[in-house]
Image 1: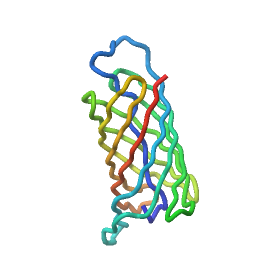
Image 2: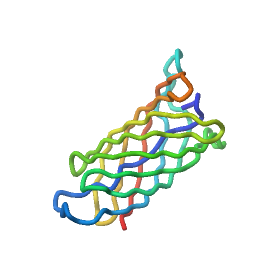
Image 3: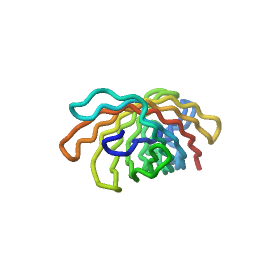
Image 4: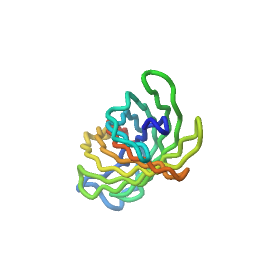
Length: 162
C-alpha cells in the first residue's frame, strides 16, 4: 500500500479440527508469513496494481477456544527491496469451518509514522499435525489519519503449534 508504505499481513490463529476436544487447554503457536499488496487505491485516486512490496512477519497466537484465537504479528515492509515501514498487527481469528476462517486485524504502523489500518480477511488453512499452512486474502483501509484508502493483499503463512 504505497500511501502508507506498509503492507498489512497476518495469519490465521490456531484453528482446531472437529476431532479436537473442546475442553482441551488453549494452544499456542508461532507463525511466519510473507505477503504482498495485489492492488491499491489511494483516497480519491485510481486503482493501481501490484505495489512491488513484500512483508515478512513473525507472530505469536493463543487459541482461546477451539474456534477463536488472538494473535500479534510484527514485521517490516520492503518496497522494491528498500525498507519502507514497520508495524504491529493484533487480531482476532474465528474458524467457522475446519479449513476456512475470517480474521479481524488492526494494523498499527509504527515507523515512519503511526496510523490505524483496518485489515479484515478470509483464509484457507490445513492442519498437518502441529503444522498449518495458510493462505489469506485481505482488504485494508488506513483510517487513523482521516484519509481512508483501499488495498487488497495476499499472505501465505506457516503456523507451528506448541
